[in-house]
Image (cartoon, rainbow, N blue to C red; front, side, top):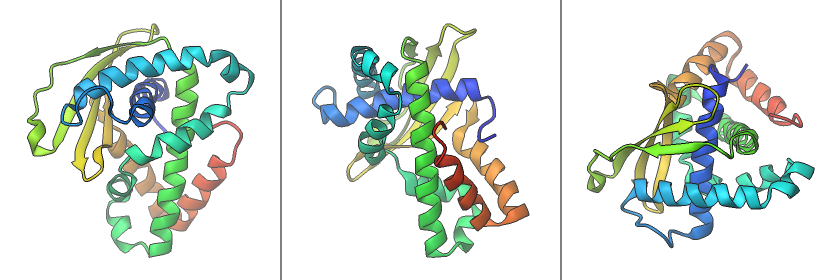
Length: 212
């Protein structure tokens, strides 16, 4: 089991990837790069429309979404920061080869998880809370609620920081539970028991499966 509370995390991945994919294709044509919340709102709405337009093709070949996510989403993650925080002290003691291997495996895990969510949660409604952070400081939290039609709305917060190439997401929390913290706890236990190489090998094997 990769994630706890999988249904809630799928909602996270759906909403987040919707934002990221259109963000790349629109090249910030709408909204300001200094207004991450406006960017999230605009691009999410456009992504939902695109997914619905491509529904027939995706129904016939769901794996097409893997390539879409891989090509367009990856530039907008700060995978290096995410990997450092997920591995914690194990990152500091890892070799260069291990760091590269983990980043690649973790990135592929995210692509596959997001892809599954994209196909499952295209009709969700997202409500955006007022942005309270000072954007000029380069670190914000965009707060949302996602209504999936499967129970109570899910509170989702996106942590973004401003890098040279624009805003990058480095963490997501669901109902107050951090994605990074969740993975960090799971992976730390596994590394302690079996070692970092074993964790990387397991993720690589997991990623090769037809369905994430």
